[in-house]
Length: 193
Image (tube, rainbow, N blue to C red; front, side, top):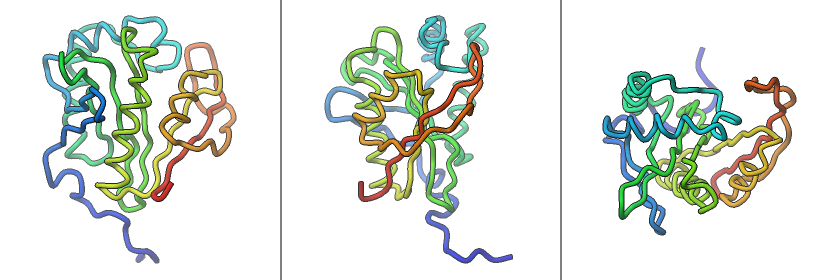
């Protein structure tokens, strides 16, 4: 059965080229993950504050090495795209930003991020999210980016707002965290915002 609208983006839009490095313009570099990032990612996932809002835990560096290999392969699959967020001058890992649940034909994706303990309070998440969003909407041509966070996660709400994502509503009892079901705020940006 044919679709009634043309696809927004065609297969190969991402995988037809190498995953790019993106710069925030203010000291952050978003780059593809590397095997040498394993110890820093493992260390980040030992932080209890990360566990409060992130549904994944890291039991070993070997497990994290598998994640990074999957994150690197995701680019070719065009369903997820993950970047390490590092200090442009020192190379220190500050966090991660990602496009998840990419549907090229519909021109939509979900933005996700986390930051290391040392990076919190320095504006890393909103700056990295803004850089990724500009690239995804303006250069690649995605039409809509969504960002969701637990309503109790006020820091993520501030990140969304600083990165220009408008609050569209609340998804009730939408995500299971270690302490139970959470309502989730849904924010979005579309081309032209």
